[in-house]
Image 1 (cartoon, rainbow, N blue to C red):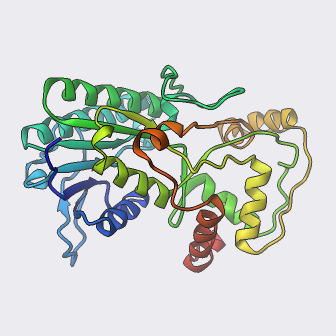
Image 2: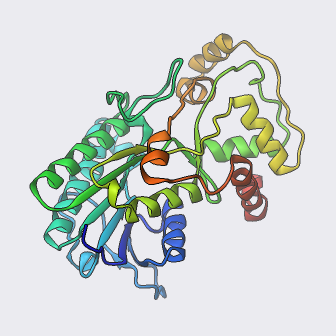
Length: 323
């Protein structure tokens, strides 16, 4: 493979994952150009505004002189006005937007695109064994389906051009700046709220945001990565009770876990309209990240305990502890 320009365009650079990726790539010696929706006033870091991402996005200015792209930007939820047809809303950004970026990148002479997809492409749960790259795609929701369709759109562009594509499918990503369910769980643990999870016997894979960034940097530089899809994780799967205990240790508080039959927990959640949230806590979702280790020689640069410790330090110092 010819040498790739060290200038990398990172889409979604202002987001939770994007900030970690930009820092990791800079530390690895890449020059980073940040693609953001809007450049904040007073920002002078070379960021390029691309507006809303979709089929009509003009990437030419952002792609000028770029050797590779890390595509993180995505729609991860739908607004109320899109709730009637969430798949169409996801497709507009995640599928049409990804296809347009890849096609324009190929036309601009970009050699490689690393696309961060989601383990949701494989499905929502595992039974008896972890997901692998050989498993059929079985997305169950609109977001997961759009990510699978985006992967296929990338493959179509790659087949018609000289551009190289690499897909990474992470499970739940946590770390400083995390939001949504993981942040709410941390807040409950920090406040000492008793949680009815002691009887849950599951296993779930996690991925620290800095470890994901490290995997992206590895994929960018590895000649053998072209055309491959890799599942990525911390490599230390935890049950939900073990995660609560690990979070409590990181936060310096006692873990408050109560026994409660998982079947009744699911029934109660369904009655309250919280079935999906409880399934993410009670169900199993394991990822086999052996392929990226074997083929690219990649290893997670930190343990789960170290990742949770960094997340806890951020949480206690950011004001999020009161959420």
